Length: 196
Image (cartoon, rainbow, N blue to C red; front, side, top):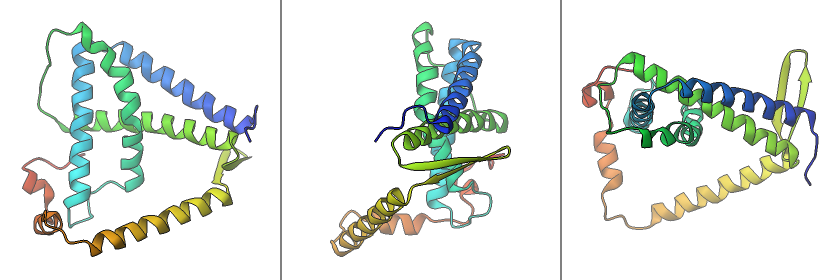
């Protein structure tokens, strides 16, 4: 069932489109080398946070999973905006990451992630997988009970897969390697300054 003309879905899509247009205009002012540097810095930021989230035994100083998830959702849009400009470039620039470049890349990915999330929820509304209401100046969005149940059943299935995987003999030593490499100070281990 597709709901045509859902006002909240249309509002979300409009907000996402306006934000993406604004980001595309900003990227349009970048030189090809700046586009390459921004994409490289986005890779570095995602890699760095992935390592920190996976291997740090100390949760202090880490970003939340929803923030990281938003940055991951922004990756495809970042590539779409930045990569086409590479053909205008004669080589790949390089430079060291700084707190400023990391923060800029995180913000860039976060904004694009919000665009992706707004589009996704607009489609969920149009397909009856969510609901929304406007309360004053706030927009309240919810998954439908049906989707919540499907998600719950998916989680049960994922849990069963983990249980079955745990019963299989492992010869690759991955779990042991991960356990041996957990560290309270991942920034020191990576020999880099902490972000922000």
